[in-house]
Length: 268
Length: 89
Ligand SMILES: Nc1ncnc2c1ncn2[C@@H]1O[C@H](COP(=O)(O)OP(=O)(O)OP(=O)(O)O)[C@@H](O)[C@H]1O
Ligand SMILES: [Mg+2]
Image 1 (cartoon, helix red, strand yellow):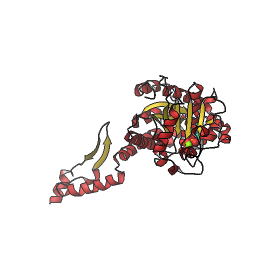
Image 2: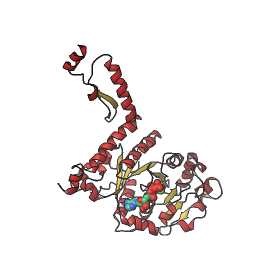
Image 3: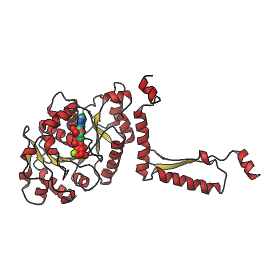
Image 4: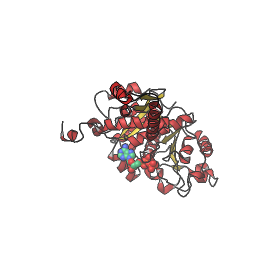
């Protein structure tokens, strides 16, 4: 096995990076892949609670990097899925405790045992972001249908391109179809018109995400959640499957335009 | 037209969002903020005015972008001939 590393990042804070990392981790593991999620938000550990694993933490990312424990001692096994693991962030340190080279080395050590390494990036464009994208084979940029979030996504696209990574892919999260139909929210087509990036998924605003986070059980596990379905579709596209985009936003044209804009294909 | 449409002058806020986004991204990508563009415009008007009478109020300078190229586009109308003659007199 040699894992692919995917980093979920955004620029703007609070747009859904941690939610996406947890859900994609669960979706990929449910589909039979061996997955490890790394919380890259050092000092603001959160992925553990979103995945419901906060009570199992002994060691963290910085313990591994500074040699206080073996890598496998910091791997926390998921409660529900046999092939899902978490490496939590350190809570009482800051981003400077880790370097981009440390992350590359860590992910290299994980590659032989996993199919996917998912990295939850902190907000911003500083050290934590640099650490998170250093080992990435695939960068997923997440945004919300708002001017400020899309603007920050554009900045991130530029920074990822400057790193000579393969082209990043876009997730539009928290779409409210009713508002888009009414003309009071940017549509996915609007966003793709202004950003030079391919789309990999559109996730609706969904109360199930809040409920899931309350319970520490990602929405992907809820078969009725529309956001969960959207994350399952993204996981399939990450593996190269050509999954059609569901028409969340309008009956007229969304389908046709999206399929023109998006080149099918996955992580490569 | 419903009540809400009338309230916002029939302009959908998503349209406004997209236009603002397009403009802000052009300036971000060029690393050339709107305030600097205004300063450039003032300098340009001062320089040009030494050579030709221009209609300063209608001068328009903007940053544009197509796929591969960002460019400054200047539209510099000359002062109407009558006004020019008057000044000469
Ligand atoms: N599709 C969605 N529907 C409803 N709520 C959502 C959705 N996606 C995210 N949220 C909520 O938005 C909030 C922020 O999400 P999250 O913590 O994943 O963002 P983040 O990008 O990781 O934030 P930070 O930059 O602080 O790390 C959370 O309360 C989460 O439950
Ligand atoms: Mg987060």
